[in-house]
Length: 222
Image 1 (spheres, rainbow, N blue to C red):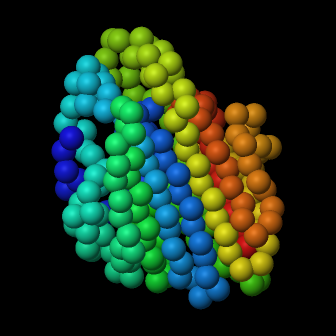
Image 2 (cartoon, one colour; image 1 turned 180 degrees about the vertical axis):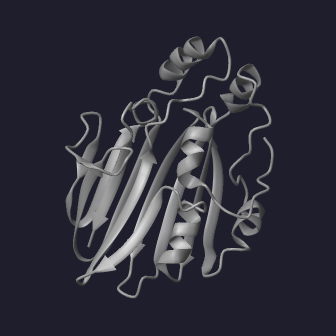
């Protein structure tokens, strides 16, 4: 697998770059002053390289797969430091875990969405709002004539791969859902969620997330 070459992360976009070959869990702990800690665990199937070669995307960029990758990746993001990193093998997967501290909301956004196209944080009337579009509803690119066959294979092989995100902050928080355009919607049926309390969270299968026709976003309030 190639080493990461980019100075900015793309944690959310990585889910779609790697289709179903990555399981991603993100936990965000916010402090009153806007600083906090981001803990991320991601699981990459060793089938990734095989699928990449089959669908013509063997040269697609990789996310960080070592501590040195992470150090290079965040070196241009002001206000971020690595607390810990670990990696292990489990079956046919590589599981990596990284803990990062950020000093302000801008640094968190740079970690999650360097293009500022899917994430935003605002504060008004003593309430903080964090919007994050996980899937904007754009059609999934069909890399080859065997796209449908490959998607069927992915559904079977990676059925237990999930995307999970949680947030904890001082006081109680709430979690609501949006479509890919940011309009509020009821909780999508494939989603498991805790929508209020000191820690709010959601979990969805990677394939359910990728194939959500109208897109899915989350909105945190605290």
